[in-house]
Length: 159
Image: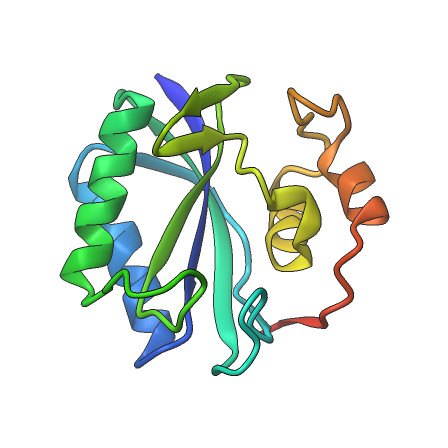
């Protein structure tokens, strides 16, 4: 089994329902949820003129390959009404693969560890809640160290 950390987020509609539904769909496809952070709310990052995001991080075990998991995540996003119109636009659901085992993956459609996770408090704070000592395989730093060095200053509030 592969150990994977996912960030789930939403800033449209009933955000919590979209995220909870996505977790149920992942489980229904054989993923085992072994840890889940609290929900956190933060202002939009990257494209700031939109509603606040609700985010959480889960750790799953899965037999899916990285590309199979990416395809499943995209199917779940689409089932929630996600439309890929512009980068960082408002969305009903976003599922990012943060870590996949200790692998470094560099494919045209998939980069793992997630290339922006060290720059985003809304990712690092829930990740630090469930895996503070997890080591980034590229930077060789723990999640807590990355959080201490993170340049993002957006407030991240536990809900």
